[in-house]
Image (cartoon, rainbow, N blue to C red; front, side):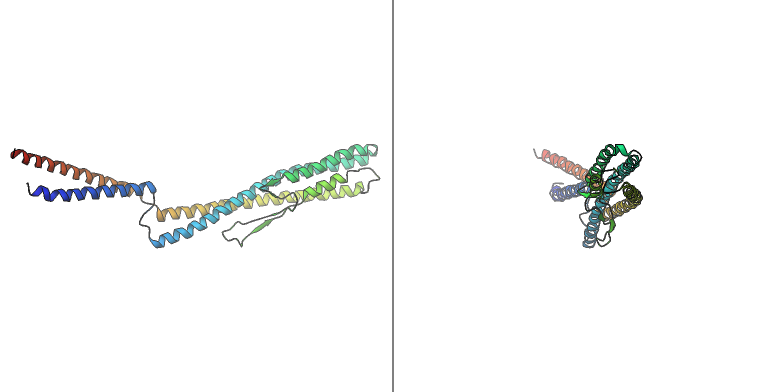
Length: 266
């Protein structure tokens, strides 16, 4: 026994060190969730897919901003439409009650300025479909060469113009008949824009869902390529822990045997 113990001690010591190293390695893999032995080919694929996923995420953010802008525009158009109808009623009232034309004209001017205010405040990140230089371009696909334009209308200038033409008397430079014709035209334009915005909203939401789906699919595929099998690693960790326990048990037994031999020679 005395010659066997020195031979076994280094072996057990190495076995313990090996088991401990395997435990640390397995625990690290479980903590990071990333396979440390990822092949170069898979790493290259992951890099490419990550770039695509980033592009889809950027497109999704842009589409969500565009959808927010369309929503603000729809709210603004509803208010502008209501105001235009009020202005049309004022002109008709001024025609029927010419003696109070100036009173109607004051309210008409105020409503025109309200249109200007609504258009000027209908902004998302500085973009507008109702104010100066209306219209935006969105990019619904992975390629930047695929784009779609959403047209708007400059209601800021229109509101200013309508307010300036607030004289509803028979002697006004712009006749009430012309005002009625113009207001009906603007009302029709608003109605057409409302239909367009509704269609844009549906299309944008569909593109958002698609973009998020592509990004999610890429993320899942990347995870399949690089993530560890946690269940398998947990099983390996249990095996390593069991082996370490056995090794420590053997060391304890050898130490006891060695102590017994030393007792004989006391």
